[in-house]
Length: 336
Image 1: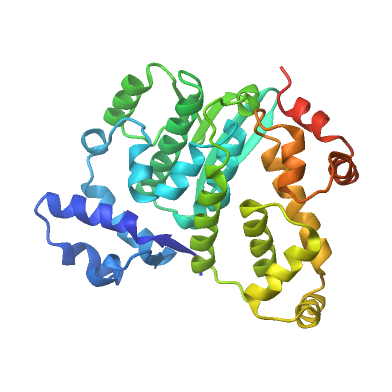
Image 2: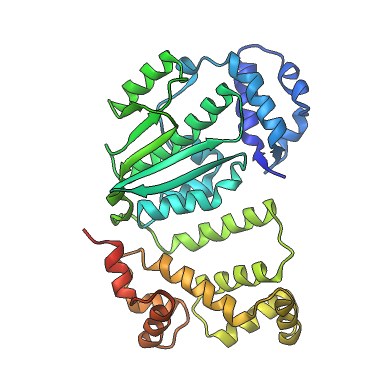
């Protein structure tokens, strides 16, 4: 079942009550109890979420109630996600983090990043068929992404909105964005693709594993996995983040955490069509690409963090996986 964080519903309810309206008039037709909105990390199913937005939208004066695109709203409600997105080596990595963990906000829509002819486009697609709901959701998400773009590359980017946006709000947005607003057929954020891979000097790489670990725990609560494959990969990542380790000690650590013998763990993994060495290789590939996005981190340190005994063994592993050396991968990422 697709769900949405109840924090969005709380914002709608607070806005509704601030104008002196009865909260029951908004919540009851949607089948929402006020108490469930107070549950930490609570979720609403998509159907009730859309009904709530459709009920609130006609009473929202977007031109008066909207604020300039900024990140504080995201920090206030989703601190770990916002912190991770503002602590990436590049804009591409920041967007990757946002899209990977965005289910923590909601799953009733889709955001796509596409590159074509030197231009990058981030497009928003709502599953609702209500014009006001589409406009509200699209603007909220794209304004967060616009603010993220400004964090990494101030003064860059263009917000593209279709004609259904209300005239007064259009004028407000045009003033806030200082001309970086354009009419089009869809809700999109556009900017030069070259900005995606420009190095950001303020990245605090040691902080990333802590934030990633917290977000992984939140995702696990959202979609608990009973598969040993997912649990083993998460435990491998945690051990690599804490300290580099050889494959044998990593396996011992996973078995100890799961309270399983090696034989029993391997049997579970075989039943799921995989084996420990393959999962370790996959995690190392993913972590290698992530670490190499920080140009300040020496190549030797990347190999050490991933548990390789020598730089040559790490280089050999990387070339077999990606048909290029780690240095070539990094140079390609930051060309131009």
